[in-house]
Length: 251
Image (cartoon, rainbow, N blue to C red; front, side, top):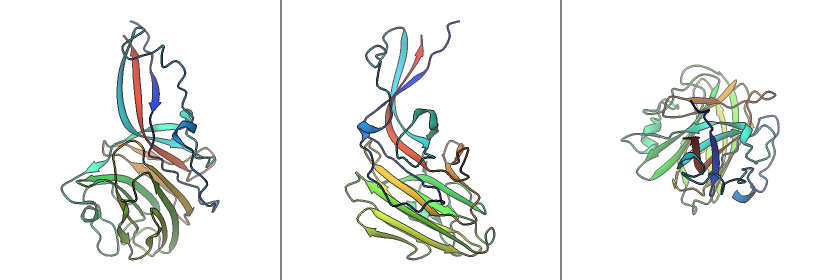
């Protein structure tokens, strides 16, 4: 049997999510253009679809890369995997299921004490970024959690759809958001959207303060979740890229 050969070629622009460690309250730096992202396009001509003894499939994915250096640069060796957005009958705000000052998602991950959860929920309007920390009636008894989020390439169509609690997640300028959360034995977080599903949207998400949050995860509707950590950071920066790709295997 022939040895399998697998490689990926990233194409096009990107949705980029950058989560920054709580240890450094840095301001946003200029995001790199798609051409600056660290993908190697060498050999594309040699490995063209169906040529050279390889069978290739093209597609689009939401790929996660950890970014422990907070560089905003995609490094292939830091690839964790790809995620699938959740979806359901309700719109994103209703799906968050906010009551008792807390999140109770109808479709999505179950909140956990001392953990920050992030995921996409897709409704008729597009993709919606969901984020929350902690759990209702448990977990941390007193914690501060601060995040900054910047959306680019979405024609300023996104907005705060829900803030948990009221006014703690704000749009401070067009497509730039700040979450300044303080919770006591409940959750805080919110929903930002809608975002187009097209390649070309960038979202920078930075942790500025995490307090007693022990871990952060990005959840996928296919049952997987990705712990957002590096060898040196309990909560690491990471990037999500909505990217075109080509996957090839030996025939």
